[in-house]
Length: 162
Image (cartoon, rainbow, N blue to C red; front, side):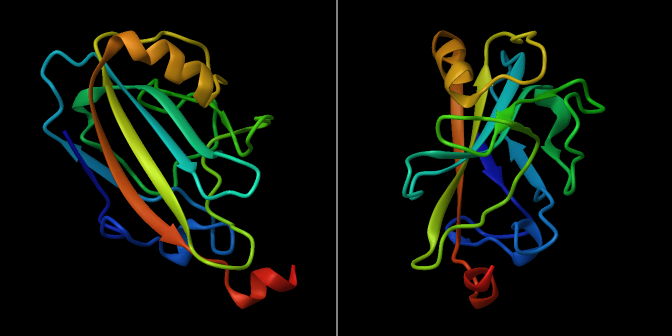
C-alpha cells in the first residue's frame, strides 16, 4: 500500500498552508495498492517529537478504501460526506478536538509528522470521537497493511512570538 500527498514529498517540509501557523487545513492525501480484501481505512497523524510525548493531530476512520484519497481542507465535522468518522485529537493524554489540527511545534528543530494509513479487514462502525489509542488497540487484529507518509515542520519566527 502506498500513501502520498500532492502537497509535499515524503520526508519534506509540510507547507505552511497545512499548519496551525497557516490556514490549518488538512492536506490532500492519495493512496494506492490497497489490499483488495480491505473493508475500511484508518488515518492517524502524530508527532513523535513533541516534548510531552506522542502528540495526535488527526484521526479519521471507517474511510472507504475505494476513495483513493482525501481532499484538502476537510471540515472538522464528526462525520464526513463519505460516512467516515473523525476522532478526537490534539494532545497526548487529553483529546478534546475533532478533525485536523496541523503542526505547531515549539521553537527549535523541525518535528517529524507521521501520516499512517491502515487497511482493515472490517469496518469498525464506531461513532465519531474515538481516540488514536482506542483505534490502535481495535485495529491490531484487523490490520491488513499500512503505509506511512512523513512530513516535517519547524515553527517560524512569528510562532515564537505568540
